[in-house]
Image 1 (cartoon, rainbow, N blue to C red):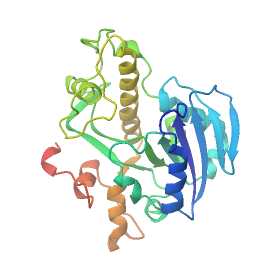
Image 2: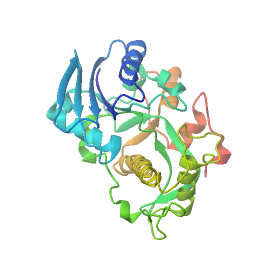
Image 3: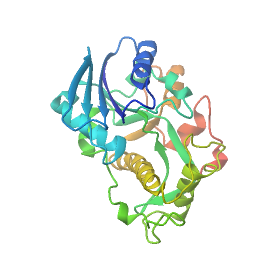
Image 4: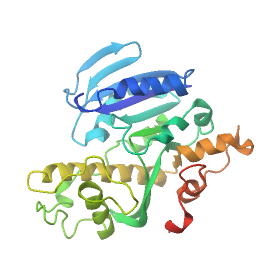
Length: 288
């Protein structure tokens, strides 16, 4: 199995060991996989190319849409070489933040169950209630800090960037940062505000870098919100094209099952996955 990691970062002041941590995880969990890495540093200019070591290349990337535009830069750099791999591994330098136990579930046996299928594998997060974005109802998404998907799905996406028009969403007022007519539901607005600046989303977890929303932090709030929206829309777009979003813990649970050890049948919806994974299963009562 051949895998290429596209690691998005912005300098090395934070998460200095991200690349080496990913290498260590592959050595520990997927030692027989053919693994290469393209590190996309958005602090470097587009066009910068620097061999780092065998199988590792550092390039400059576009920071226009943070990690999503960075991954576009990496795909453009690889060109047709992208199709030499069974899986493309999307990662950000912050991949070890918050819940990380699912990372130790990845191995080649697990990925082989979905090799050749329209499936993207990562950790499925969800809100307590559905929200609406750009007229689409949604509740769950793949955490894009660590996702595996086949190259053909990237071709079909065209770009990892889905949302670019800030003026459509933001008012410029830190006291009420969203436009009244922004294409985002009230519940989604409150989830974002709670996650970035408050006590979370009523699920007992808080973001590691929350901040006060002021005139000085408004630009960062808008940029981080755009990243949240692009993360949600990536899952929405994959599903719309028939690509299943697969929870890594659920998929590892199937590997442990004799029934699915070699052949995986139909992939159930996200609700069935997160309520039947063998650890951290969600109670069905909170999913609508």
